[in-house]
Picture 1 (cartoon, rainbow, N blue to C red):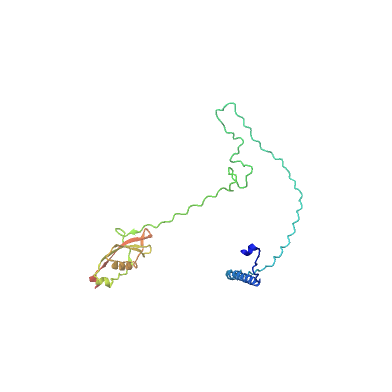
Picture 2 (cartoon, rainbow, N blue to C red):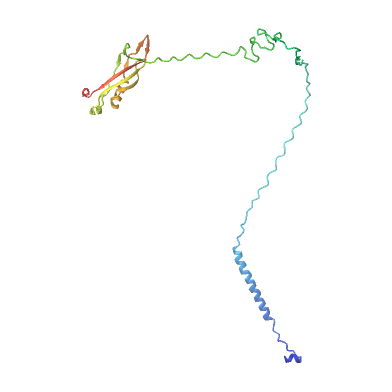
Length: 251
């Protein structure tokens, strides 16, 4: 302090520049390391862009040249139209009567009769025919077919009509199971016989059990009668057949 007052100045000792350069270099190296290390980790995580292969197709061939334009058609000679002087029909003039007539008579003077030929007709037409109709007129429809002859109903045998003779008879079988079960009784059947005497249908009128009915139907279907002739014509007929099943008779 006293030195300053007296005017004497003491300078600080000057140091060498080598330590400053070393310190600066070290700080720069640390800074570079601090920047490069994170950059390396980031570069590893960045996905690589796949390489793409591009194929270049050859250029398409040029289109074929257009077809030559067709030649213009030569104008043909104009045709001359000949006009024929044809009379133009004029509409009749209608004149209102001065007085109302008491009666009106038809004017048939200009109308053709049915027996007169009309202009414009064709060969083969008939007087009074329709214009544009068929030559000779519309053909008559064919006659209806004859009615189908229906077969007469069958004749029921009885009274004055006697049953035709039975030519072939088959006896019904008595099943052993029905005999052991002592099944017996009467089976009444209605038999339909055709024109030739063959049995056409059989119906049970009175049953003695399904077992006995089945055997009776099987036997009667094999029967055969003589044809029934009435007034010189064969006819179908109905006849009643009674079959008896008895255990005493079977044993």
